[in-house]
Image 1 (tube, rainbow, N blue to C red):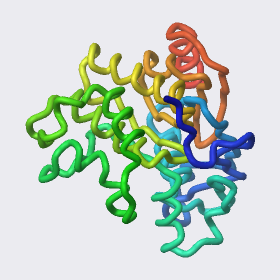
Image 2 (image 1 turned 60 degrees about the vertical axis):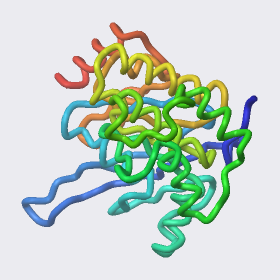
Image 3 (image 1 turned 180 degrees about the horizontal axis):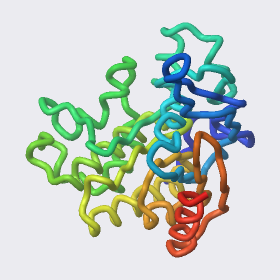
Amino acid sequence: MKSEPAGNGAGPVVTAHEISRRYGEGDTAVDALAGLSLDIEPGKLTAVMGPSGSGKSTLMHILAALDSPTSGYVTIAGTRLGQLSDKDVTKIRRQHIGFIFQFFNLLPMLTAEENIVLPLSLAGEKPDNAFLGDLIKRVGLADRLTHRPSELSGGQQQRVAIARALVSRPTVVFADEPTGNLDSKTGGEILELLQESVENYGQSMVMVTHEARAAAAAARILFLADGRIVKDLGGAGEEEILNTIHEVTLA
């Protein structure tokens, strides 16, 4: 079974046009992003890396409509965000964006299945049972659906979070350090699951990570420094990624 996420067409699923983000004013102002432009291609896993303070988290928040740029603009599925009301931006998030967080962000009072279908429940929609069943099978949660987060391991909780991000078949999924809170073995399993979501569902995904192993799973790796993209690799192994990080950090 292969399902296409909403908005997966030939053009970029997300674009950033000369976006900057300034915090503070005057002598204390900090430019987290400095006129950055970017296209996110459909059906691929894109990794974003960079040293602390490089702007990678700010970039993800702006691309995911969680923050607004000081200048420039972002489009998601062809819609320019800066021209929308807060209500319409919320609608864009629900319709087009999925999130995977480092610390899972599950609701403790809900079961695994209830957490998975939460985005649909909030939108007043019913799940596609065939797709939901396939998704639950692929993330390996069929025997854990009635468990609450406190009854699940870290890896199982992240599997719930991944399924929750995919259940509405969004245009793009943003993953913020998705393996950062997991042991090496479990992190490897989660990376395989993310890759499979791209391959099986044609899912577009942007992953912020500081781990070379995680970035090596991506088809494209962007390296940020001082709020700019300083290197754009079309996929790379761990050694090349580590060498690039060293170059970027010293530059």
